[in-house]
Image (cartoon, rainbow, N blue to C red):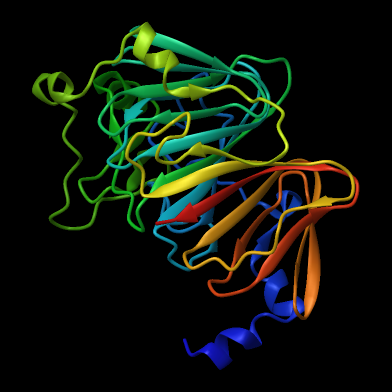
Amino acid sequence: MTENASRQSWTPAGMAARIVRYADLQPCYNAFIDTRTPGSEAKENFTIIGPGVSENPEQHVHIAEPHGFNIGGARQPPNCVNSQHSHDTAEVFVVHSGHWRFDLGEHGDDAQVLLAPGDVVSLPVGCFRGFTNVGDDIGFLWAVLGGDDPGRVTWAPQVFDLAAEHGLVLLETGQLLDSTRGDVAPAGVGPMPRTSAAQVAALRRIGPTDAENLAWRATPGAGETPVIAPGAALDGPHPFTLSRIDLAAGEALAAATPATPEVLFVHRGEMTIGWDGGAVTLAAGDTMTVPIGLTRRIASAAGGVGYRVSGL
């Protein structure tokens, strides 16, 4: 895209198309193989930016533009479980609402991490993890996955067994087949093999001490605080950085011009993103992608807390 063409999208209308409001999120209730398993059937999956890792081709993608990372979300009622699985790229969660327990290991009993609103957890590549809303209300996790193509999910063996009992089969292409509605696999396409004992043994196991080092506990600050970055609290290898923004009423960050993809998420309160030509205000739960090369200013009239992801 040329500079002039990109500037045409910097109108208020063009920028509005780069915002996904929390109220406008379109969930998928059958995104993964475990979505009929008792205890997991009420979870909602969201693909906000990028293709994500959904196994359902009908999953709605809000913004398809490649960023070098994906943004997604999970919303679950109390006691709803996301089953044990592993990812091919880094996975980071920001707790927007609810209280959550992250369970590590094939059966979720190697270690647990408890998180509250505003907390962040970075889950490494190649280790089983699952998560449960252990609070009393519906909870929402805002997620960042590394890469334009975050690969496929590797499920713990028992997840395949439970899914088969409820009519769901994961094909070797990475897509779901629902036998209860008469779905038939395409010619020459077989089921995904059940994860083997050798594959399980090859994955990383994380104990309680190391598990706690995966989490960053929300600490009120002033201005912008690095959370995931070299030398920050979570400094492991990630294809993106993440920082927390704390603004009191009437405060603003200095103007900046991102040279890489940048995504803003409002956790609490409100934030206004202004530029030469307009301004938009984001409320709690809203996500916005900022165009590369746009000089923007982040301010808050009433006060707000947000998180900023930046590509490398």
